[in-house]
Image: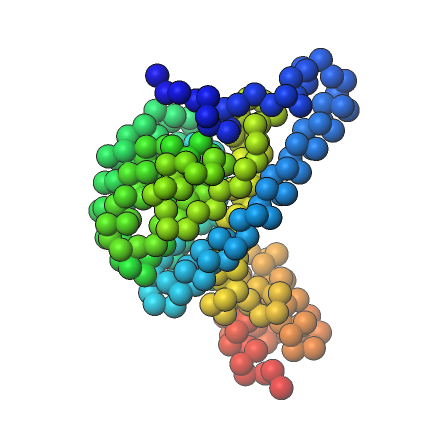
Length: 274
């Protein structure tokens, strides 16, 4: 039996002991108040997040990739962030890869037992042939998930940069990482439910890692998505609005120019920006 007494995310939150007897407004207000702690906890780890962003951007510029590995909520959040990168930044879907214990089936149905296999995590990364230009981010609220630790071990053996995201500073995950991003979000509103504050903190960090690395590698102009994929009418209109803003022309004119260049914003800017 695992001793969970020292795992932050498994401790009981004294602030919410009586949440089940509160009026609904007080209940949601208390949850909201506790959620703010996830934001505050990230303040202290921003230097480490910046280090990770620099490593990821450097890797991208040298043909490397970014891998997220997690189980349960942590894995789903990693897959979510990875899946948003191609449409947002126009990158290949192999540049940022989300891996969840139990495979894609675990995205929709609980596969909690899959996280206990160190060897499965190790083998999953071993077969992918990582290099020194790759970055792997292991995500686990408790900081002890065997599947994630196995993946981190394989990545380190391949010479990749290994990062950790957890809510348990000093955990096994941190000990295995080159760069540690572990905000202390404290005990959850519902004891052990790490889809709450811990998951919120993980999402915030993942947002920064992928977005800032893409900015640093030229996929954002000012604060505009110049590599967005125009895969539907809404996104084509967004492309037109972005181009209109950059070139200082009307949206309809921008749309016409884009339609003549496969809705490639960067190409249109290169040709028409004065």
